Length: 118
Image 1 (tube, helix red, strand yellow):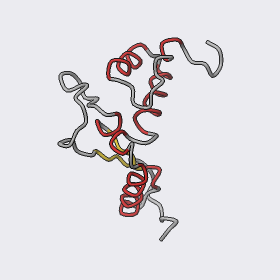
Image 2 (image 1 turned 90 degrees about the horizontal axis):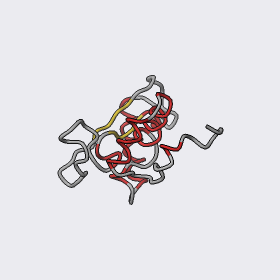
Image 3 (image 1 turned 180 degrees about the vertical axis):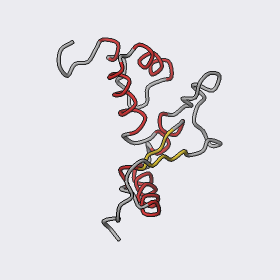
Image 4 (image 1 turned 45 degrees about the vertical axis):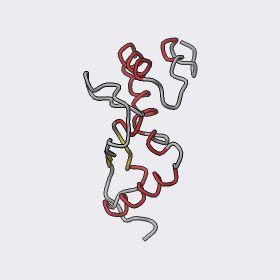
């Protein structure tokens, strides 16, 4: 593998919101470090699917939540189907499309700290 190019099996991950088959294949076939990269890029960072057309509302929600939890907004993220556009639970739920009846699952991991904007 050449530096910064990644392995061939990850060349199919080119979309912001990859389809369930492509994502599952990348996770199953990847090395530990490649799986960590997929988790970081598609599961904890970037604009979640649920807010793809209104990213600043997502950021406002993170800020609001962070103020109440006393953590940096960077430590608040959306997980689950709202993040990638479909359920990432095990089968038979895997691939179920995010929709109006879906919920927003938030996760916050970080050290409690005084908020810089108070």
